[in-house]
Length: 122
Image (tube, helix red, strand yellow):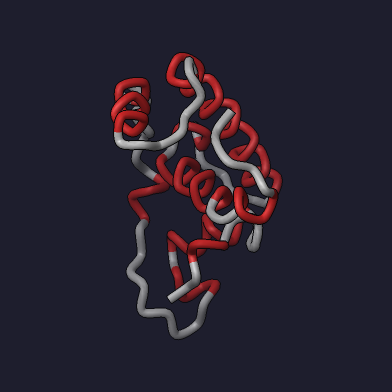
């Protein structure tokens, strides 16, 4: 399969959107299943603060206080990705609130800390 640990920035947001909906549309012969519900399901931010706190106790180096602004940061990032997808022809109401946008944000981040020399979330 795709080398995910350095996929961040390798493909445009629309490529990831299309790939999750129908992998064979971007990767002919792919055996990856389709994930169409990601375009339908709304993202749930309600437990984000507690999840960040748990991850911090497990060693994830989130900055102190990050949990208080994480939802705001995630929503801003989602708006930017949704705007890019809309500019590239995706027409879904409430796109910025869909699980697919959160997954795209995650995929676009993978490997970027290594590439940029960054270490943690700000």
